[in-house]
Image (cartoon, rainbow, N blue to C red):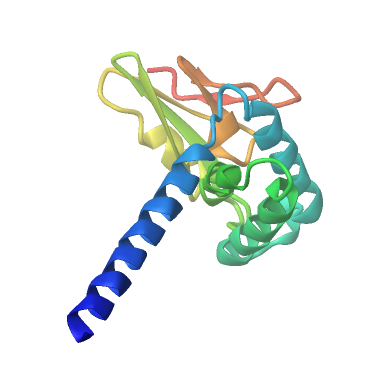
Length: 161
């Protein structure tokens, strides 16, 4: 009798895991398509709930952003939380004096945070450029395909190489 019970338990566990996997994949976030508006609204909710300039610790900022994103997305598509939190994690919020730095080489632009504008401009790749997206705290917004997006005031610093 014991082998039947064990087999039944294993079958139930496998079917439960398959059901969970199917449910998670069905709710996948489409950041650039159908869920773009939800992601933008959740990022705006994070900006309101967790003002970037009020944090002196990056981890505390990301924790706040995680909670705000979860709340904002609970009624739409909770699987988009990761995309929103990724933007918070790749930001200068809670990192005093840090800047978003865009480096372009061979037509590819990458973003990171640097401890100062000077460090960003000095990090220009050979044959490429680097720029500081002044006043834009998240790498999700700082760079375009060709370099830095201008801040709301139209400013950015360029290495000029």
